[in-house]
Length: 452
Image (cartoon, rainbow, N blue to C red; front, side):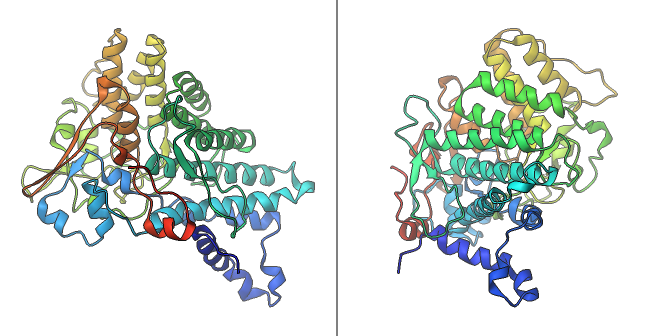
């Protein structure tokens, strides 16, 4: 019997579980295979599966928070303990890999269903589902790439390991790791094609729309260091959907002040469980908390003072209203991409307009907003990057940002963890910025581990 890859094994189980409702209603096994436009719509409306379960190890390894030795030792999950200190040890939990590939499998399944429905290709439902499937596939590919691959450098990207690019719903094909360049080419292609089919307005919360795809492209090109393209797609996104929340309308005294599915959310997504970053566990970096200006409302919206340990802070500003981490895409992120990309391509006036548009909505309206006026490109870039960190706390961006910014000597940072008497460091451009794949995946899929 042909050996199945780990992806195949997982997808068989998932495929069977997703068809339970059909098995309950139809005795003929031939009829359980999704094949209609309605079936595709049902698959694309599975919010729990498609918008959740994304990998967390990268964010666990960031510098926005820390753990006491007691809290670190209390962690039950060994892989999460190791990811906190960047331990180059074998990881065994395959779910961080399997869950995104489940989304990819469902997306491919929908694309195959739709590919056979030529008579429906001009319907709005067909286009929405086709575009959504491409978007979800690109989104999952990108988060896996940000975790398991090295920073993108055009000159070496063809020689660097990417991820397996599963582009059909077959479950027994051998998995092969594409190059990093090929991986990003596929991500870009999927997002671009998604933008063609997705509607300008999407009535169902949680599903992507055209601006979501443009934002995905802006994020991808930013990771690649292609700032001209990042700027163009960020601008295209904001031309369609530019709303920002006025933080003056939020109540800092609320347990979770930021509403779910608010006007800034272009696409909602959540990661798998990350115990180290739970509100009751993670202690926010004092330097980060202290970096907000006196009248910047984000400090009160994002953080609350702990009583134990005294003088520390925990995070409460999730865009999912409760879960600590939010991995979706928001307009605030897109404004920051536009500001950074504009600054890097010498569009200083546009960069200033973008960053001030965002920051004014975060400022206490009872005090006159003091706009950023810096005209020196290098100094302005530093301001924008600092604001990016302050705005996108626990939003799934910091690990990718650290990785890409380490390529520039001006922004390199050595990360340091202190756990009791033990000190751990992660130097810039370390190979450990590409987290190891689960040994379960390596063994069953027979694909190469990341280089060390």
